[in-house]
Image 1: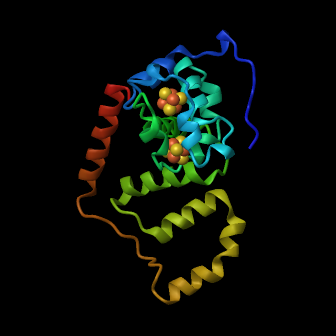
Image 2 (image 1 turned 135 degrees about the vertical axis):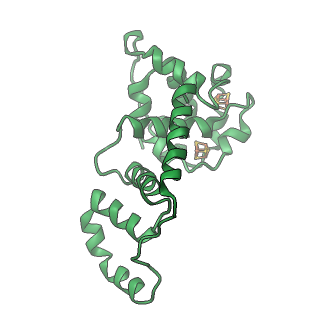
Length: 196
Ligand code: SF4
Ligand code: SF4
């Protein structure tokens, strides 16, 4: 992946975004970032990123929302924590990348039919709707929204799994689903209140 090297202007900054990142969980110390680059050096995926973790920290705290939420790096992060454990300033880089991913999902800032955010959204919809995940239905819903051709290509394997009972069709549900919904609503309300 080619690193992006564009000139940034003050007018492109979004001060609300800069405020949000430093108030989000894990962002309390982002202003202490030295820009030493250890996080990028330790990241096994930085070679494939358009913005390395070091650059993402800098762009985020300065409020360059468009660049950060449009970056492929937030989707490549595997949460291995190598950046975080090596940071001399104990900055929660991994948690911040999670927060950025979550914000990109909330604002639907991702390429159409991009599997990772679609999976995250379908996962949370299933938990809200039935209290449980049924993997076969989750896979089906993700492929229908991202790549129907891949789904068709995997139909042979799917049938084998169905025949051998490795892929249940019956949807799992918990009892008292209303309580689960209430719980999720209260988590969402708390997040909103705390702006995290
Ligand atoms: S290792 Fe820590 S201090 Fe160094 S650039 Fe990365 S986040 Fe900043
Ligand atoms: S947690 Fe993500 S950003 Fe940090 S080193 Fe691992 S892959 Fe790279």
